[in-house]
Amino acid sequence: MPQEASARPHAAPRRSLLRAVAAFGAVIPALLPALVGTVVGVSLGGMSPWVAAQPVWPTKPVRLVIPFPAGGATDIIGRTVAARLGVALGQQVIVENRPGAGGTIGSDAVAKSAPDGYTLLMATSSTHSIGPALNPKMPYDAVRDFAPVAHIANAPSVLVVGRDSPARTAPELIAMLKRNPGRYNFGSSGIGTYPHLSAEMFKWRAGGLFVVHIPYRGTGLVITDLVAGQIAFLMDSIVSAQSHIRDGKIRALAVTGAKRSTSLPAVPTFTELGIPGMEFSNWFGVFAPAGTPPDIVQRLNRELNAVMRSPEVLERLERAGADAAGGTPEQFARVYRDEFESWKAVIQRANIKPE
Image (cartoon, helix red, strand yellow):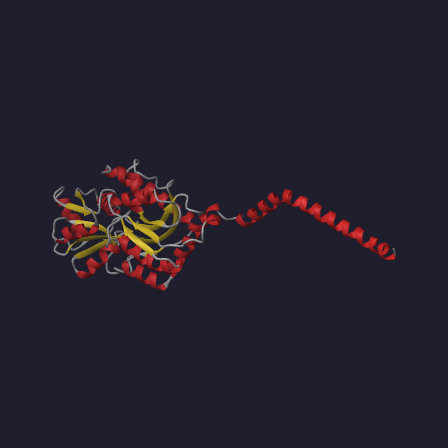
């Protein structure tokens, strides 16, 4: 009996403990959804659902589409950036040239690609400022179908003639063209491209020159005919014209922009020659398809800005005649939207129609 009596005081606490455990077990199922929702909400806070559901980007090579032929300004700048970006991302950045229709074919392909960060576009004034101003029925919308990523560089244009041209200076070329209206041709890499519009601006600012436009499929073909004397002049990006100028195949007469190019310091600006309104430059930038997760866009922007600050890239761009740009995606968006209005005025004045 004494043993039984001494055991009863311990039995009550055990029963209380068991009742508490049972009660807590009954509450857990009711609390579980709320607990899970809280944990998920915390884990996803500030993060896109795509990132939560996928491995950390990038897990495979990234494709950079260049909508112009190899060897042109866009290709040179694109390949310079791609090599360094691949190192920064830890994945290869594969350059793919998809030329045609003044950059429209390659740009449209990117616009219709999956917005997963694995397909990017190296765009220019031609694809996102001039093209939309020229053709409102383009297969893509330059604003709605793309996410601006980074402004890469700016490059002035240069007025060039063949090495055997009788014109030794820009004023001599202008005088020759004025004496023979309609007799001479000029070339470009296609209707509505930056070289085409630059030449139209030159014709207008030089006093309304009457010169026939011959569109080509790529700048390389234009250079061939320029050297052969089949066309009188070309307004090309310094980046793509540079090597031909150094080789002596063509001669530079004037450059656009507010100051002389560091890569062609002996060549005067149009402003110096008394030809106003020629201070423009061609921009180059990277876009992703619309809907690309913002965290991927921001990562690319950070990496590309760092790439453009690297001494190696700065030296290569300067040697090619381009100036590194940079900035936020929002700043880049303002650049190409503002240029749209400027080139639209040139297109209307020259009465240029899309192909």
